[in-house]
Length: 199
Image 1 (spheres, rainbow, N blue to C red):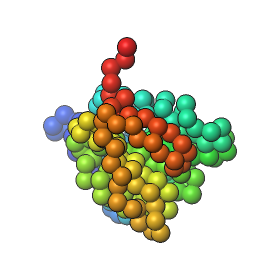
Image 2 (image 1 turned 30 degrees about the horizontal axis):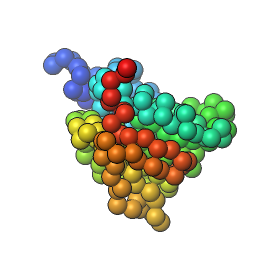
Image 3 (image 1 turned 60 degrees about the vertical axis):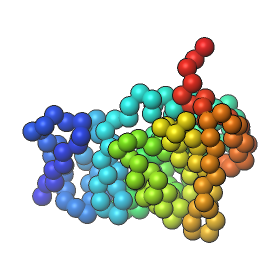
């Protein structure tokens, strides 16, 4: 059987043909075409996002550099990794921090226990999943910290730390103030730097 979907980035009238049928598995996902969309799974349900817009990519690149400069040698920040949570749960966080030794294994997917921090930059098409669905999924997977960046809000940084099997209420850091964080390592930065012009 085949399933079809109509991602927002495709011209009207054209459809991507996807192998398998709902509920999808991670193995189904690995057979999907490379059509410019980001495919993720939550409990077998397909989450489809178009390629990120330039400001989204800029924020990720800036944050990656900030974290790279601050990270101890045993930890490595990485953008857009494959995160397999279970047979029917698969995410592509915008950025993660993992142990350097987990990178050196060269495995195609990370496990939740490898991830010390997951970061999502909120886009208009992903607001609900980044604010609610992924926060719950990452907490249930035991990821110690989750950062959400809201670009339309300054930008602002929302920091969640795990307490039991749920994240504590977000600690909000506004543009123009320095956020000083200790998990997964010590780092300080102004969220405004994520979109500030160079020079």
